[in-house]
Length: 64
Image (cartoon, rainbow, N blue to C red; front, side, top):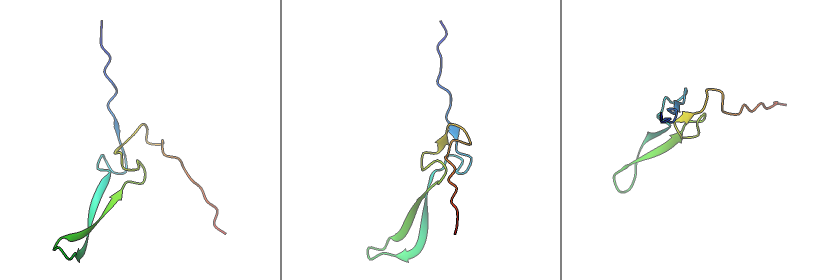
């Protein structure tokens, strides 16, 4: 009997599988390390994969 393998995850089209990045602010902290910001991909919300390219909800707002 053939075994089914799970489908490979789809990489996020925005981050290409690198969902979280650390951005150096250039500021030195008191202990000598640099202050960094962790930023997650907005499309996949930091997971790195999506089921389809259009799986993220589209939010439309009206500006007054």
